[in-house]
Structure formats: C-alpha cells, structure tokens
Image (cartoon, rainbow, N blue to C red; front, side, top):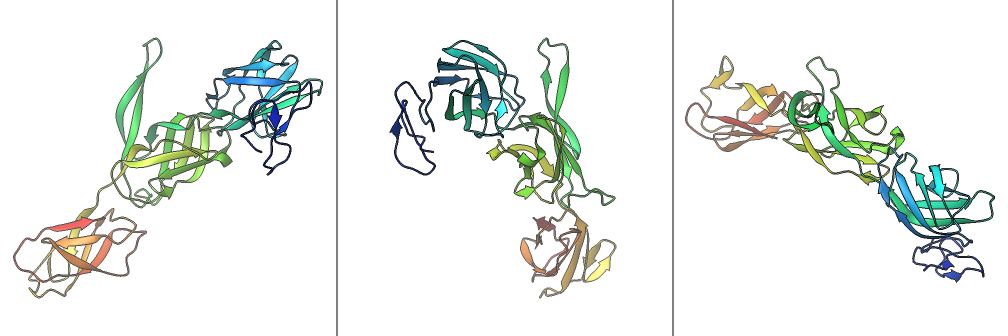
Length: 321
C-alpha cells in the first residue's frame, strides 16, 4: 500500500500510486489502506518485547467498543488483551510476537469500521547475554532488582574448530538472552558466517540451543535473527587456537624431523589439532611451506606442505588459519 498518504486519505488498491480522500464522515490515519469512522493519531510506545504483555496506548477518535490486532491484516494478526479506554484513547496489552514495522488494526466489535495503521509497531531485536557449551568463562553477572541474588553470564572459549567434541558428538551451544520469539521457524542463529544448525527453543523468548558449526577465530560474532530482525553480533565465542604436535618428512626423531635438504622440496607432514576447515598456511623459519592437497577439512589434524629452501636448526613452525 502507499504509505505516504496523509491523514484523511487512503490508498485503495495494492500497487496503486494515488491517494483518495475518505468519504464524508469517515477518516484515516497516515498511511492507511482504508477509511472508517475510526481515526488513529498515535501508538505509544511503538515497540516492545517479543514476550508481549506490555501496555500500549492508542489515541484517536471513535475507538470505543473496538478490538486491536498487531501483525499482517487478516487471520495472522494477534489480538491485544485487556483492552480498556474510551472513544479517544484505548489501552491494551501486546500479544507475543516478533517482527518490525507491523500493522496495528483497530476494528469495531460490531464490524461497522476498521482502520489499519501501517507499520506502527515493532518488536524488540533479539539480544544475547550468555553462550555456553564449550569452556565456560564467566564474564559478568546480573543482580536481581532487590540485589539479593546474582546470575553469572558466560561466554564460550576453546570451542573445537570441527564443531565436534572428542567423541565425535556435535557440540551443543546453549544461548540465553531475550526477544527470541516463540516460533522456531522464525529463528536463525549464525556463528561468524556459518549457520548454527538444528536451532531449538528451550524457553520461549529467552532460551535457545543449536549445534556449533565449524569455524576458527577468537571472539567471533554470534547473531540471532528473528523474523528477519537481525540482532547485535555478540562476540562471546572463541574457537580453539591451532596446535602442532609433530612434524615428519626428513629424518624423523620423535615428534621432530631433522637433516632436511637446504634446497627444500621435501614433503612435510604436519600433525596437530584444530587446524580449521580450510587448509592452513604453514610457515617454517618465516618462509611459506606450500600446501599440498588434499586437505581433510573434517578431521582438521593433518596438513602436507613442500619444504621451502633454507638453512639452520630448530626452525620454528607456525600455522596460520
């Protein structure tokens, strides 16, 4: 609908480009798609939590003996509860829901009139307070209103880059926060740029679980999206840094290798843990040891590379993800 129509005019058809004055005795709010005796001047506040149950105040005219819905026009809209007021203002408690720029519809109980205020209300964006599932580190705490109790807030560290624990089981993240909504089909979770699979609600609006995706990095962003509302990226999760446990390829002595030719070219086998899903870069004495495929991005514990030319002993090996 044309959302630019001024009060007292409406857009009669979807996709049209003209604003038509209301018939005598009827009225509309700004951006209305129809006219009636009902008139809305404001909806305050224009946002609230996905839990619902919060009071909103609607001001206007001809508002008595009416009910209020928030959401798409039609059966998908949710009804406000505990409505009360008079002809010029009514109050009601918001229903639970999610999304932004939702319509507020006031309908006379006898069906004699209806007014849709386009995009008049938005639910709050999702927020994250804790992420648990890997090594749990308390980073803050919240106090109850009376100060008698505290709740620790956690971030997760040293998460396996494979997304799986030592036994091969998928690591499950437990995410606490708010404004997650109550419909799992509306929720997406991402860790860095990877989707967190099998998202499930453990508690409507404030508790989620999902399977940790593979990844690398420290303090990567975790984002919850609800009904296309993208929450703030919270940097409360870190993957384990890579570790090198052994190198083989020349004359192998325990976990090390020696007597490598100065001209290079020998294939080295570097093993360890948490190498990441993509073949990492191996540096030997500051020179690149060129990667040799294939690389197993599922196991992430072994990489082959071609020894660069060089000289010296006890050269350090660095792995860059």
